[in-house]
Image (cartoon, rainbow, N blue to C red; front, top):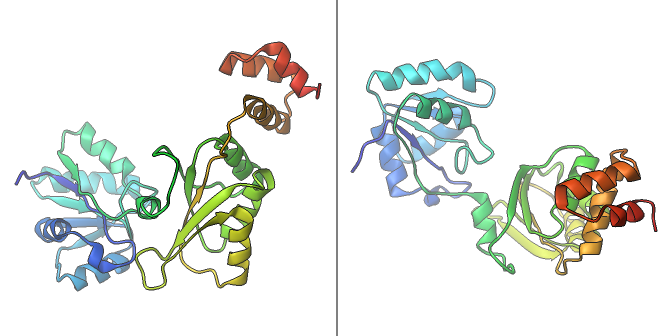
Length: 270
């Protein structure tokens, strides 16, 4: 088997039985494991009798750790990177060091493994394979609503915390009141829950039940694409940002080739 300097290793998102045989072998064979929280990672290592030493590597010390990791690899040692759960670099630390390692000529490989996005999508029926992943949504209502409108005609998926999920869905419902949604929480765990329905139904369900566990959510695209509706959505977004009808007509004609006069009439309500 080919040897690499640096291994990106996914860890289970809940059920420890989901770790791969190869992941266990790699974590046992490397000289050092870079991890977000050693207390979380140590539980996995103890479960599989992995005795490899760990070093902290998270979003607050990524740049500080670069030199240490480079020196470790230059000395001939091998390293692995894990996050607290799931696949590193997917809304988890790792991008900074991977960029530096490639710049310095070190060999890198990534193992396939657990990921909440795919775990949810693989059990949800959709019209086609295309979707947009937006990570964790911004915290402000205008930004969330903007993303919901921008993705009106394509499925989009995001992560959300239990203390924000209801508010986030309410914001999306403000601008997409008839949208269909799905969520998964506690995926792969004993109390896993997946639900598909109208966004209002999901909000009601969450209000009536104790909300725990990290969420991965899918907002389905609108079934019918309308050029007129698309134009109105784009005009409203720019109006909300304070642009005049004249400015909007110029911007949309330049960006999307839309008829300037039609855009202007739409912006002034004709």
